[in-house]
Amino acid sequence: MAVRYIQTCRLPTPFGVFDMHGFEEPDTGKEHVALTLGDLNSPEPMLARTHSECLTGDALYSMRCDCGYQLEEALRSIAREGRGILMYLRQEGRGIGLLNKIRAYNLQDQGADTVEANEQLGFAADLRDYSMCRDMLAHLGIRSLRLMTNNPRKVDALTDLGIEIAERVPLHVGRNPHNEHYLNTKQSKLGHWFETHQDDDPAV
Ligand SMILES: Nc1nc2c(ncn2[C@@H]2O[C@H](COP(=O)(O)OP(=O)(O)OP(=O)(O)O)[C@@H](O)[C@H]2O)c(=O)[nH]1
Ligand SMILES: [Zn+2]
Image (cartoon, rainbow, N blue to C red; front, top):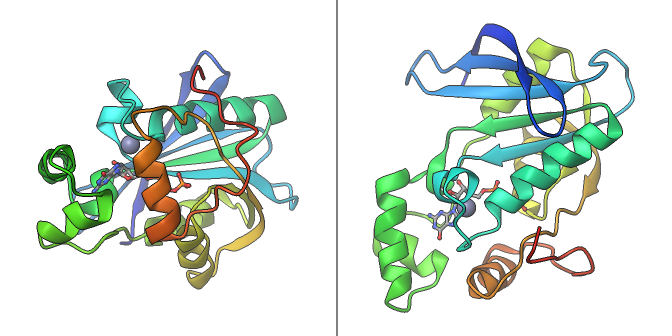
């Protein structure tokens, strides 16, 4: 979905002081943000995270998934490097929305896995669209990414949009007994790369 730039402000966080850039999808009114740090104009590939909204994991400390841990680690890594971008995309529940995600979690409480639950509700496993990233990166003048992700479909989707992924950087954090089955399903059914677990730390 196309987005237009609205405004920028400072965003101090425990990890560093970011610039927050706001964008809007004119067709839907959906709002997305990009947090940036450091020199945006250097041609060197930039450490980047495209993070899909997960209210439960990002804001409510849910341990059912790895989202909150990944969000924190991504911001920490960007701050450590002194340069990078985190695009926070408002596509909750892999695009099905918060209330449908609660319905999907309810089905998972009864034994379905994350993919089966989506399918039982009549949705594909992953409904996300990343085309807003192209506009956000173009607006900010960022050409090439070192993308923090374990999701091969995300790499393919961004590449298909013409976004250069110079490197894929693994982001393995937050594995715990509550999300073990979820992460294993992401690996077996959605193809996620969890080849090494040396960075996994439930305490993160
Ligand atoms: N439908 C559904 N969505 C979920 C479930 N668990 C987490 N999510 C959503 O999945 C999305 C996770 O997105 P990302 O953090 O980009 O993770 P990813 O696509 O697995 O890939 P990574 O880049 O490796 O993290 C968020 O929108 C969450 O709300 C679930 O059980 N069902
Ligand atoms: Zn989550």
